[in-house]
Length: 113
Length: 113
Image (cartoon, rainbow over all chains, first blue to last red; front, side, top):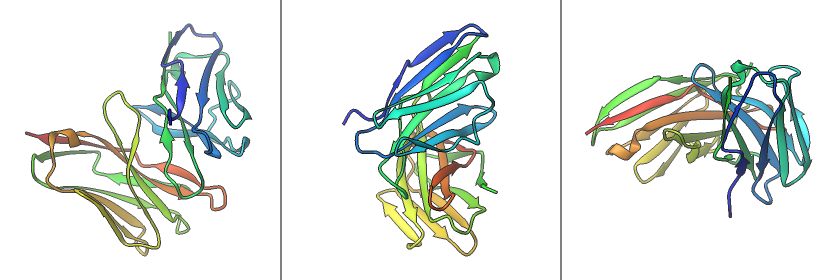
């Protein structure tokens, strides 16, 4: 079991550029979550999917953020255009079902300059 | 609304002593309560969890207690060791039927040798 796989591990981009973060959940897990972590705001849920369907995107900061899950083994989080305040660590997590803990990926450290 | 409060935000404990971290939650329907440990620069990792049909669960030096009436739960670490130094997050489920975890703000635990 390779765990939840995220790419890239680090991303440095200029303000205004498009950023795409990628996640491969654990095979057999039917829920996928995108979190953002900052010192000021802690762990914030951005969006989550059940069986590839977006369930709750109320945590997505604004229209610049979008997420997709075209199949059970892949999800993307896109920021367009990026801004310095988007700098954070973005975690993807998956779980096998309700009332089970999440397994987190290693995260993507995003820096927007 | 969905809210998990965690205290204290920082905790320093002499090696060998016990550490206790407390959390309260707002939704009486919550019924799954995991705890995560995050070492510096790494992903959050599940260390123990409890479901609402039990009041206490123990795993070696770690234990979690749950009081559903008061809507609070606690993490207890006994015989602390330097490798216990990390940030600990509690979490609780919300949105019955499409459960998602809301995390507390974290406790930075430092074990003093």
